[in-house]
Length: 115
Image 1 (spheres, helix red, strand yellow):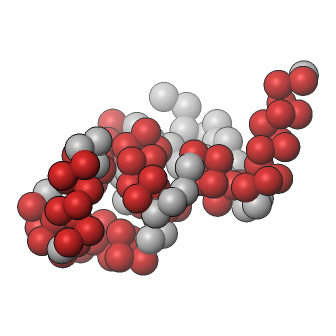
Image 2 (cartoon, one colour):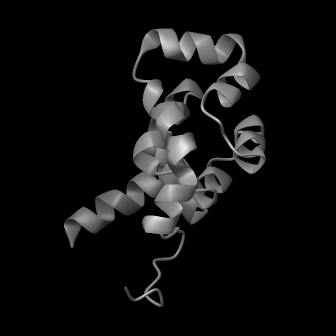
C-alpha cells in the first residue's frame, strides 16, 4: 500500500488502525440502539469499561475530540453514531477534518459536484 498518498485532513484507516480502533468502533456501533445511547449518557465511564477502550480512547471521548478519535483508530462510519449524540452530522465532522466551518465544507462539497 502506498502510504505516501495522503489527502489533507484525512487520517489513513488501514488494517493496523482498524485493529487499534476496534473497541471504539464497536462501542460507537452500539449507538444504533436507543437503549445503548441512554446507557452511555447515564454513565459514560462504565460504558467505556464495558467496551474495554484504551485510556487514550477514553480521553478523546471525554474531550469530545472527533479528530483525535479518528487518530486513535475510530472509523468515521462508526464515529458518526457518536457524533449524532453530540448533535454533529457528517458535514460538521468534515469541516473539523479540513479546518473549515460546516457551511464552508458544505459549499466545498457543492462545488466539487459541479466539476
